[in-house]
Length: 268
Ligand code: DGL
Image (cartoon, rainbow, N blue to C red; front, side, top):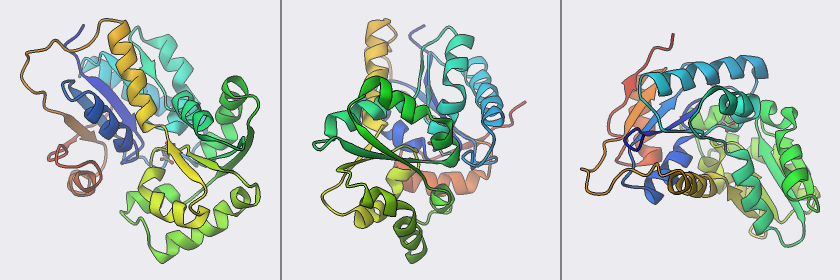
């Protein structure tokens, strides 16, 4: 099954940070991306509801689009459903939480780190468990940042309002003396300038995008799933459950020229 696409999904635009990394690392692979902008944000919802959304989207990406690898490019959905998805399908299913924790553990020098995410992600305890497993010596400050996702979805990245919100939400991370902050929501790299201004230049910001793309490449190689050489350049597919014009407009600004066109998808 080397000719199917790598499928990625998120509640909206956030997973495009991961899609960008996958396209850059694996330009010869076909990708299909689904942004559930019609139902974002996932962060304030109950985890069992997010789990239902994740299963519905994954069914669509496998059944209609024939995905060969599924990337849950949304921390909230990964916290809610990664294990269920891995058990339900016989293709590799990759999340963003473990790759992010690996990057964070490699980056810290003083052993004090922070992770920021949606309320759903932070309250699920998924990061707390992943850090305890992969980097037990690290001291973790986990904070939720309600409101950040909505700013990104509106295309507002460094306004006065988002700056004021960031100062308030990130204050405990500054007080904790962390030297590394993991952006545990795939939307947050789009707020990196604001978050970086608030945290100061001594704090390294880490995202899971690159490490997740490396994980996908490792799986393709290990499982013999890489798209054969010599085929024509693949066309990426972008799907949204929300407004197509807005998805194309903001999506092309965020991802780049590959997102020239998006299609509406109705999930059943
Ligand atoms: N990008 C999603 C994540 O990583 C945002 C979830 C939301 O829609 O609140 O958690």
